[in-house]
Image (cartoon, rainbow, N blue to C red):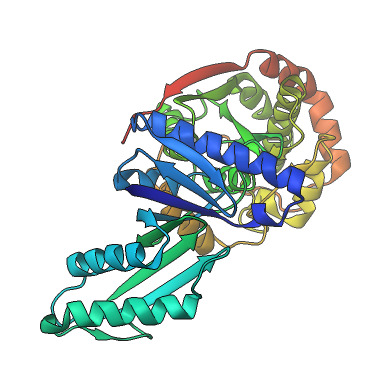
Length: 392
């Protein structure tokens, strides 16, 4: 029987009550992912240390590997755990997957009470494969085999597989509460959003629509970047939230200190996101800021930015440089979208300040009445429903 084995990591380290809750949530999200990708009739079973997927073809393993909380996925064949059944299945798999003259290794794992140990299983399986395939010139290579025969004996079942698909890891999505992400669609913010999603947070993406001070391509890129992140979410569809910020930007253009525009802009975004967080019962704001990357992200300016709101500001990229962030973006599938040039912000001054003074910022915000404008912008937030494209 085709069975997909699913391994998780840090979930196993939790207390029994928390572990059971997280296992159940992970199984639920895997099940939802399989339905979303149109693998109908599949079942997800919870067993100690593993989840079993039955009724789905091995093609489903790739999608399961993208579920947060999954450490590895093994498309396997299942049989009974008695030694004769195991030997028979392993020989069949070896005959099919080991080519003439290739090397192989056996990697067994025995969990629970069995009349054999892992070492016993390795010796018996290796000998059986060598004997039956002796005319094909195959040989054992324990360090760099062409094919590895993995065997897991668990209770009454045994599983044989030759491939391990690395999962994204982390914790099940939504298990750690809710956050608001300042989602621009550039390289940084989708990566920051993904990293918090990986840690189990439900993240609501909030896009600031700064038109007419940005072009339509800026907004379109953000929508495409968000769609790429949806591949990691088990639901059929998801919502991108949008706040109209054009009026706020126009008012910032009137600032008597043009060098402070970027700081004023970011503080305004924080305020809008904080108001939205209260409405959505979110516990923090996620940004893609990296220390020193641009003028508004110096330590002095980050200090000024944080003072604008009471909520925690989470910056998962704070210690990464641009090359490292781009590497993450490539790995999660957003780079080719977010690296494209778009019609960017026209409010950025020629010489933005790197050390804004708090008293100047307060004076400018009062002069421009930015707090009231931010409250209005937060009240006008809309949502865009984006449907997932199955097996895209």
